[in-house]
Image (cartoon, rainbow, N blue to C red):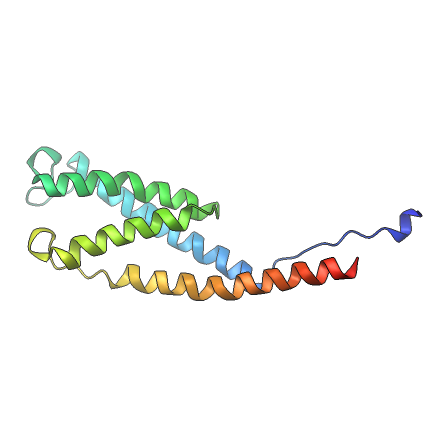
Length: 144
């Protein structure tokens, strides 16, 4: 074979894939922010009623410790576009939705619509990205 005849198929990400990666990174920044806010509450820097860890009710202690650990973990997974990142983020969003929608008398009536709308955007962006990526790979394989 002559070296000039060998061509490597290069796959370049499309606009949908790039926007999906940046969407993950924006959500990662929000997750990191939420994680830091939970840590601020845990260490007692937040001024409010029962916001120091030893003064919190047990249900807030469990929720705040869990989310303070899981939100930064989800942020790392989303930023690096690891497959487990959206899963951890969904668990955090589901936990907050259950907290604020399922038990408003314990946790308050904070709206969980933000997480739900971001999760809808995630899956709406994911479906075209998977289809375009699969088409690009098939086209590159048929060229060879």
